[in-house]
Length: 516
Image (cartoon, rainbow, N blue to C red; front, side, top):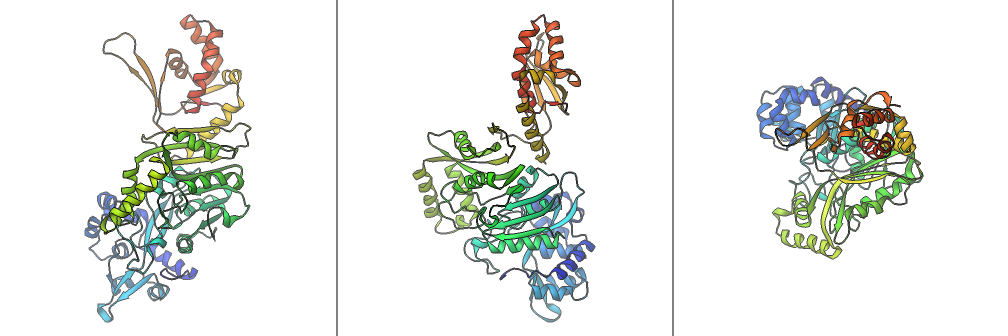
């Protein structure tokens, strides 16, 4: 593979051992840099980290070499990578390049090698590393510009490293022991890296052969052998295989031309994300999940929720779609023009016009950003929830997403009588707020606020507040309602008819949890 390191398993194993000995890990990096420089590095600001790595220790040398992409003296690199023959081997395999000769020779990294805190719910943290193209780690590829990079890589073929989107998806993913995982559009292999911790086998696909090579480098350097790769578009490389989990951080950008493989879908409008959703049903095992990040069009005269509902309709899958942000078409075009380095070029105006012309022709007024979770529940009547939620959420959210779908199974299986016969527990970290004018005898509103998961809040009446206050799993819901009716002097039968609707809402949103 041109313009990327060779995959020599033995050499990579020696390289990994050298990185571990030098504490070139996520924890070691934080200890060395301190919180300020570490946070700055996450914003692609290198100056604080450069100031923190002046001492010349092996760890400081590796940080300068592989993270800050600075030349280091060959002698310093040899001290940081001391295994016999390792340095020469990394040079021969293309991980490093040499500038100058003799005692004044300096080495440069040809790729970004970034320590990564590979954390999976229920498993101990493991040291891992993500390999990507230079300049394509935390800050994306926006500073590289168009055309070829200094390493001679076509801009369209760049392989990005760890960014905000990949971290978001990793935090959203449902983590449980599974047999087969598909990472659709793997890039540098961030999602495959996580999946390999809880799956027997991971299949990573991508349209870009360089991306698949980087996925293999990431998996090998991190010590994972259960990752295989397949080249092709969408589900084509896996035929009719089915998976317990499909994850995808696809090239979701809605652009007028597919200039960059890592970013642009190459299909009209939001068709690529729709295709990922529509194709999931044929590739999920019973009970399996498909989780992806997506962009979707807000078309004039059409409710965006109806558009997303159309993506899911007829698949037989449960779906939870969350819109996190909306940008008007000008904001959206500007964001991705900057990402492409076009804001510094002479063609900026023409390219901007091209984006706006495309949106105008399609009747697009804005673009939504968010995440989609699908589940093959096998239910005769799938649950489809489509909502806008721009507020902060707890991360990782994956466990809460799994619990949400489990609650849908419970609600589907229980009619109103069944709900009242069940027992419930008040969820952890739910608090009650009473809102009203100072000095008033009774509050105007009673609000329940959940400090976990989606961090929702909902207004309840006196009955609702009283109900959740005694949900300790001891009494059935109907018994609690009867007691409240007696206290309020209401007809128990009428109250039993009213309560199930609000009980479904409180259960669905996680304020109370059924005792199973």
